[in-house]
Length: 291
Image 1 (tube, rainbow, N blue to C red):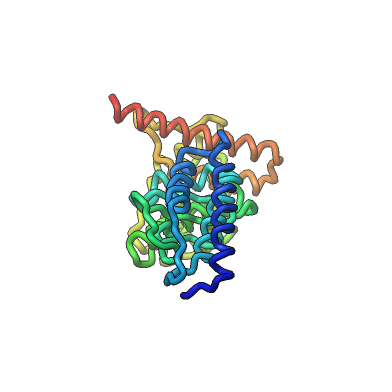
Image 2 (cartoon, rainbow, N blue to C red; image 1 turned 120 degrees about the vertical axis):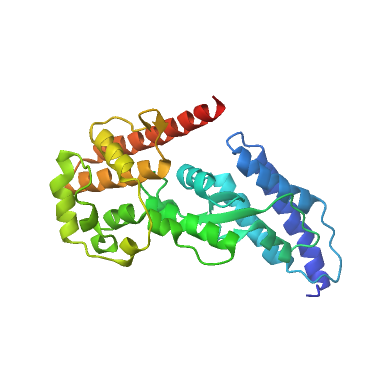
């Protein structure tokens, strides 16, 4: 792409205003260490950029993508999607932020900006405020994780859609999406046994039940029991509970409480209990690794 004199005059101003916006964002103490690393890479590239009259790059498109990233980090990163991606995402630095129009790799920006440099790869994922930053939003987690692994492996992935299938089927009221009839005899707390059977009545055998995907039902049932007793299920015996099992259990209890038409305040309390359990499990697992 060849630039005219008018383009050459406008681009330095676009870069200047982008750098000014970036610097203002970097000065905010609320920006996370992860967000700062991304902004530092962008700053290093933009501040050293030299514009010549003949460059095969779409600088305007590149600056547009960069401004989306800056705006998202400036607005604030959602806690739970980023936490789950850090735990179960691909071995690439990932960040979920608002205002990004689509998931992309940071290296994609290099298609539009000359001499783009970055020390490592980053994946950016869009987040809509309407999606909800909550440990109960497992449908979002599964989508982000599958997108991340699909980008990394360069082939479609549905691993986490399967892993979270029991929770997603309940939260979306799509009971036929998981074979609940196969798990009615698990060690469920007495309080929800009849409800599980009722859910199973709207279920049917599906491909999900035939994939070989295994769930830790003992841990999930234990976590469900603890949550119903308002106890954070951080560990079972001396072992930290897997975060995915806590999240699935949280979705089961949340769906059951919705069925009972529980109050908004009780649902908020459940959400906090799940968050506390996940943080406690993470702390315990890290402590045990150091011991």
